[in-house]
Amino acid sequence: MEIFSYTLYGILIFITLVFMFGVRKKLDLISPTIMGSLYFVILTLLFTFKDINYLHLIWAMPLVYLLILFGSRLYIYEPVIKIFNLICSLYAGILRIGISKEKIETAKKIRKQELKKELEFLVKKRIKVIK
Image (cartoon, rainbow, N blue to C red; front, side):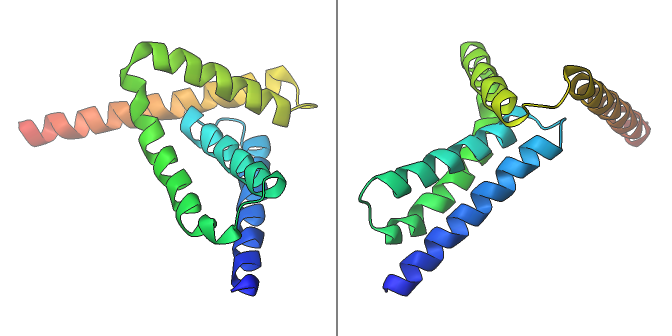
C-alpha cells in the first residue's frame, strides 16, 4: 500500500505542475481553471508538510475536480465573484511574473472577441431553428 500511496502523491505533484504551467502559458484562462490550479497547489502543500496519509488522495483529488466544476457556478452570486476573481488574479500574477502586462491583456482581449463571435453564431443558429 505504501507504493500505491507514493504513486498517488507523484500523480498529485504531476497534475499540480501541469496546472501551474498551464496557467503561466495560456494567458486567457478563466477564473475557475486558475482557482483549480490553486486548489491543487494547496492540496500538494497540505500533503507535503502535514503528516497525512497519502491514501487520502483517493478522495481529495476528485474533490478538487468537483470544486473546479462547481466553482464556475459561483458566478451567480456577485460578492463571491469579486473575492473569487481577486484570489485568482493574485495567484495568476504570481505565476506569471516576467510576462508583460500588455501580452496578458492582448490574450484576454482576443479570447473575449472569440467568445463574442461564438455567441453571435449560436444566437443566429437559434434564430434559424425558431423560424
